[in-house]
Amino acid sequence: MSGESCILSLNNKRSVVLIPRNMAVYRSFKIIETTDEEDNTYYLYFYKQEFINGVHANQVKRHSFLHSAFTQGFTFSGSHPLTTKVFSRSAHYRTQRFNSLHKNLSSKYSPIESTYILVSFDSFIPKGQLSKLLKKQYYQYRRNGQLLNAFKILHIYKDFSPEDSFVKDMINHLDFQKYRDKYSQLENLYKIDSIQFEKKCFSHLHDSHSLSTLLGFLKKEERWMDELALRTALLAENKSASHEQAIRNLIREHTDSTEQSIFLRYLAEYRTTSNELCVEILDELLHHRRYEETIQLLLSREIVPEVRQYEQVTESFLQADSNIYPPHYHTLSARLLELFSSDKKSLERIALRCISSFFDKKNLNEIAEWLTPFNKAGVYLPIQQKLNKMKMYQEDPDQQFALGELYLYFDQTERSIDCFKWEMELHPDDPKPVQVLSKVYLKLGNKEEAAAYQQLLLQMKK
Image 1 (cartoon, one colour):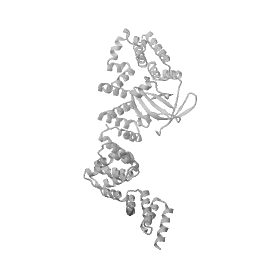
Image 2 (cartoon, one colour; image 1 turned 45 degrees about the horizontal axis):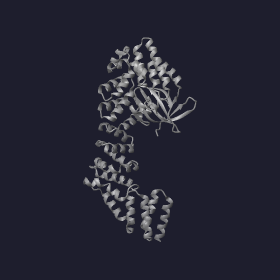
Image 3 (tube, one colour; image 1 turned 120 degrees about the vertical axis):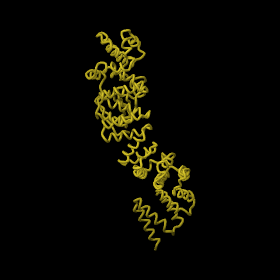
Image 4 (cartoon, rainbow, N blue to C red; image 1 turned 180 degrees about the horizontal axis):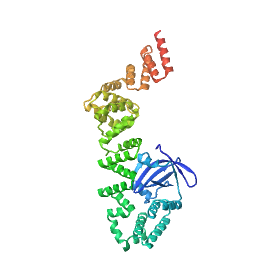
């Protein structure tokens, strides 16, 4: 669950607290899918940089604008810094009924733009109502001789209802022939219809010309968040130094140091991110001693840390929560060899930490098998001898004390206690297990148990 939340005031004057789940960036829109405490779904619509409206919907209508946004647009998680940047622009949103929304849009945007925005709510406004509005707008422009604006409305209508016979007939009318020719060329479309220009570019992002023209358009409109979202999504798909550098420039220019740090860590999740940037991200994580995130980065990417970073990298492996290692059981040993093959001392210490974390999930044979890649590489760690001894001792009643000491070596305190207690039962006159148990309990902070064994030890010496 994301740490961000907002309040949405509904038309019935009730308010709900919303948590972001996903965000779609599609053409000029950013739409955030949120849920309330009762798991109801609400969608928050942003047009360019401005919040437009919030709507309740637990299902998305197929072929609607909302459906297209989440299937054809770029999507980001609710915790992604892009989502939280949009989401945190205001902490309190209000819903509007669609009649009020239409009036408010008309006061802020051009008639064509306000119509386009309203049609994006086609999941929530009756189709007949939108068709009536579009026809009214079309005929008004037509009567006034504003044929280009009429043609723009027809394209919005066609996007909304491509099979409508009215729009099919009108859009192919001879009166619009000269505009149809201009619409076929991206450079002309850029100048005369920005809505259709964005639609066409979004549909042809694989084309370098369409992409570069769209990026230039976004920069000209100062829509840096849309540019950042576009470049981030493209970086995730294809390695491109130009996108990577542009992203770094955008976040430096428009976000604070904390946001930059978070954004860089998200970039590290993309396998297309360069080693150079990953090393920079690694620096950031090491500086803030974010041990677990450092380990995740090093285990998920084939990063080659710089020599200056190795001391802190080693510290991260030794200080990170040990629960981070078991999920990487199958790949961890090979990755440690890549990172520390030239530093056997650090490799031994880190291997010990990893192996200690496996005992709750793996048996001794599986743990010993984890060292196989080391052996194949000609690396034999002293730790392996201890594991071999443990395998021999675990069923031998005469070796429980030695087994308990080995469990202590691997930080398996509870298992060591069982061994020492068994040793006490087998050899009730031997003070060694009693002495060790007193120390173990003292280390655990159980002073009462430690004192009890210390008292027993004193009685044995009398």
